[in-house]
Length: 175
Image 1 (cartoon, rainbow, N blue to C red):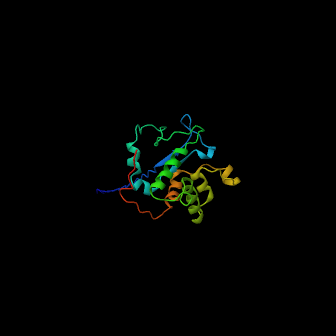
Image 2: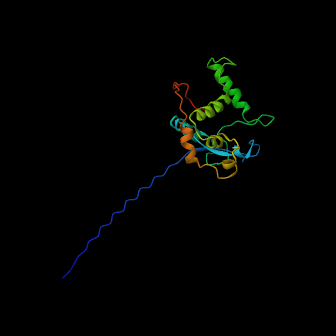
Image 3: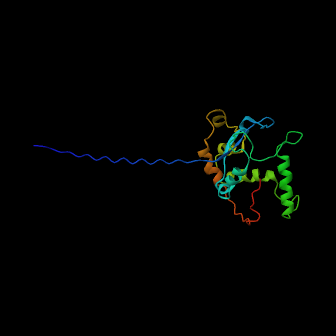
């Protein structure tokens, strides 16, 4: 008597790889500075920026193999302020769009609006603090525990949504 047993084993493995594209804020390059240790951070890039071609813009920049070379060509002012040139150029852009000085958004209003929108969504303050580079004062999360990883921060950043209509002529990212 011969008994034949056939065993068939099927193994299915599904691997999902999620890549979160971030921008790194640091003082790694000579002359750069950050206000506090919490200011050093990785912030996920909003999905709409990626959809609008931000990564194509980044690819147009020279030497993107460098992890320390800035994407933008801004230089600090004589007093070490890195944002001065950007704020001036942003004001000029708003002038060209006929916004009235004193009654228009400022470069810093984006930060305030971002934080306020997350507050209105009741997002945990420790998440918001890490994204914007603030120290979190709560003893539990402020003193203990590690930073959130970028995959935890990504849905928070992506939760910000504004209706924005930009013509193709206005949507030219230049280097």
